[in-house]
Length: 539
Image (tube, rainbow, N blue to C red; front, side, top):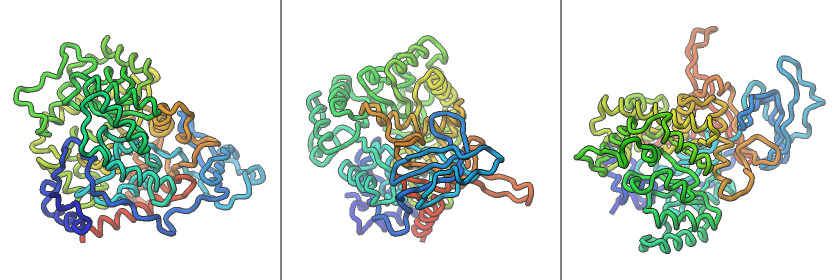
């Protein structure tokens, strides 16, 4: 029996995690599926003073606008929000000339002076899990880290067990809790009524999709299922206008690579599994070492990077795969951040934010462990890091070329593992896309418009958020520094800068306000709440 499964022992488990590390407390039933932990404490009800609004007529005045489409910034603009909807975006002047007040929108019931600040659509994280015991036992901690980094919509793959996830989704939609909007994707076979059932036949797969649709889920998180099961799942999901994404695990990728899945109707893929395998030059499966053991996580995550030289960048198969994806309007959600520690584990282990915002139990979970998923640093070598650096070089080229040809690349973080913290890992994903060759405007478009397009594609309806435009939902991010100049200003810890007037080193940036559904959240206050949770656990 897992001693963390009862609320009465939750605190004890957290304290023990700080001393013993996560290896003694993380006996997961399915190590490869960490999202199935069932002990996350739901978020508490939203307290008075947690967020202001929505307002009858909120006006954000004098902002520089990055609208999410890839268009250049423009300003000053006034943005008018009524309730949870943007109703007007009005240019109110030109730089270095006083604004004429009589030409500005009037009758505000609440105003934000955004002079000198940048406003963007709320960010969309398309690959999340909501903590879990022992690492992050309370959903509030995770939600506030997301919101503090401007993330107003997340796609749980899943956020937790099916019923728990749907409850949290609906509470967030009603703004009863402090949390981003939640899109709820689930693995086949999940749900209480399916606890003792298995998906063995295509009809089983279709039956589960019908069951899950009745429950109200938004889409499927698939693995590399055998072809007849994959086909049945995707075909049935299409009938209910459900989205789909897949982690095409190494255990099944030999018979279900990314192209195979896309041709069967998969909307998008997350991570990179199945991508390289779809364009090998001289192999059909990866030539694993003879002592390979997938259940040994250093083998699993170390060896996969060794396929970087099995493909030919720019070659015929490379080009053909991109064209096939383009023809299928296939979305790539790479989540580069979650494997980036493989390139430099020392940097990830000592990131600026750990001391203030990482729970001791979360930090313990990251440490090398045979039992904790993603804690595979049993003896990480320079050879391993070089392999991952080479892998990223090839992977990033594919992503950038796909984007340049018109393909959609979106953002996801999969944080909570491998030294990546919720919220902070998402901003790192932005930086990694810029490293891949994306202009910051393309990065922000991937985080907003293209993320929304991936969500709404299966529905066949126009997007409802993801761009700052009249008629769309008022999900917005306000930061008092230029993210195009330096994406680091979006980190909760800000960007380090020498003040030449004082000679002192300071930190600038950090999101100031995150607006979700027209409700204004003070991002600095959210981070303060997180810091207090960390301090409390340390005691």
